[in-house]
Amino acid sequence: MSTDQVLLGVGLILVLAVGSQVLASRLRIPALIILLPAGFIAGALTTDVNPDRLLGTAFQPLVSLAVAVILYDSGLALQWGKVQGRARRVVPRLVIWGVPVTMAFAAVLAAPLLGMSAGAAVMTGAILVVSGPTVVGPLLAFVRPSDRLQRILSWEGSLIDPVGGILGAVVFHAVLASTSGGVSHPLGQFLLSLGIGVAGAAVGVALLWLCLCKLDLDDVLSTTSQLACVVGVAAACDIVRDDAGLIAAILMGLAVANLRAFNLPAKRPFFETLVQLIIGVLFVAISATVTPESLRHIVLPTLALVAVLVVVTRPLVAFSATIRTELTRGERAFIGWMAPRGIVAAATASTFGAELAAAHVGGASKILPVAFLVIVATVALYGLTAVPVARRLGVTRPARTRPLLIGGDPWVIDLALALRAAGLDVLMWAPAEGQRTQITQAGLNLAPGEQLASAVAQGAEIEGVTAILLLTGEDDYNVLAATILAGNSDTPVYRLASQSSHGAVASSTPGETLFAAALTHPALTARHRAGARITTQPSDGAIPPATDLLFRVNPNGTLIPVTITRPPDPQPGDTLVLLGPGGNGTASKGRTVT
Image 1 (cartoon, rainbow, N blue to C red):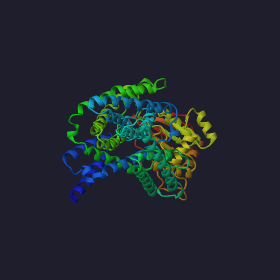
Image 2 (tube, rainbow, N blue to C red):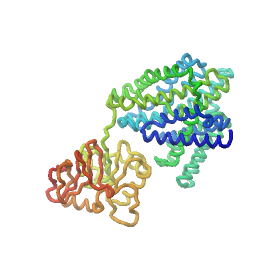
Image 3 (spheres, rainbow, N blue to C red):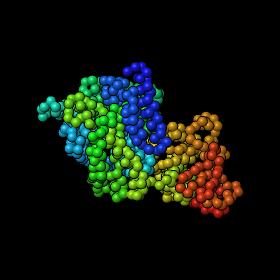
Image 4 (cartoon, rainbow, N blue to C red):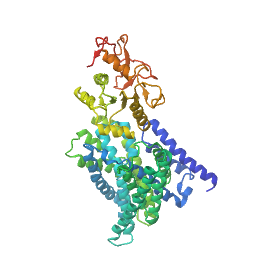
């Protein structure tokens, strides 16, 4: 290829990858729905985006290293200690039942439907067991299922990616070994690959510990050092033994996520950006290698395979995994209607399929086109039907805001009661034991202390919370918590106006400032002690004199705080939350909450 063709090809791949993801975010659909057709169409219209021509023999090794980075990132999401309650029972069942059952159905059907040899059919079955958070996450964000379903499906997607990657490597080596004959050979080859992967992971974890825990690197160097460790270890393992690097990468991610020596933030914007770019480029590049000719004779048989996986296999797995649990019938049914395939299926199909085809395994050349069609069909089907199915089953989460109020002063408890009276599910937490006792005595929900402390320390999402209000009397605590949470979490964070204009408290602190600038913690406390009470009233009534509007709750249950940058703007149908004057503790046409 000429220099101009290479430049055009690389540029098109990057533009299509990022452009498809941007368009998908605007349309609020999984990026795969756009990425795969974009790459396929580009590959059909021009040969310039064909990675086999652009990179030649370097394409498959680069795909393998890219998958290693993705699997490492998947492993980082698997902090098993965070799986609580019912999810701890259901998630392992979904994986333990789902992997062998899905693999068996897919392998048994692939041979007669697609004309594959036994080895290629088993490899196809192993590839199609994976789902993955890169496709499940966007779907769940759009559907907004109940918290319980969100936890279960998110964790299944995160866990099944590395499990599927390891299974794919095992089956790949077994199929290759079977072509050489011998009964014990496949097991020995797998144990050899596993041993090399474990040894590589041990070296990689030691390097990561040095980089992340001892050298005190900044965010940029921390990200690049992780990338270098993962790619370097995966490459070294693959040199010794093909695809042992995938095992090493998965184990490295699991170790970093679960060993106490490591303390990575919940949000890793630089690394997440890198992984997102890799996923987009991989999907476009891999789908560009799928030609219309390769799909011509397998479309209908593959759609038949998809129909069985969607209508029979997944509901069977969900029924078996959720039997004798406290999940409702609607929740169990929705779990049975959510199993899209994602990036790991595409990448492993590209890597393993090409190598098995080179080894002359019958039907192996069909593995990638089949995986491509299965991904497109499942993502499109679940993407188009998930919302109406969830609504029909009654498992969607209400759109109402669920605020977390941090603080335990009497006026904060008064505010929490007012917000609850306005129809919101309020969660509270306070630093002092006596304040927590008063919160409980008031009948309000108290957040678990360990969960909250860990979330604030790491900037993690707090389960089910959609807004955080920092209302303590400690400016330093409010500023620190706002800085951590606003920098690492997508949940909106609000804090009281600072009592001081110097020192640790600065106007540039992240998080919007609540109420008018004069309503600091001391001012609110003093007014409450003087008899002021927090009340609610409809927006169609006049706001009484000497009364401050603190919040409004719209008819959909969305909490809209009044902030320094957002002046009061009551709309018809809103419920207003007001701080009344001292004295009788009531407000005109309002209702005192005590």
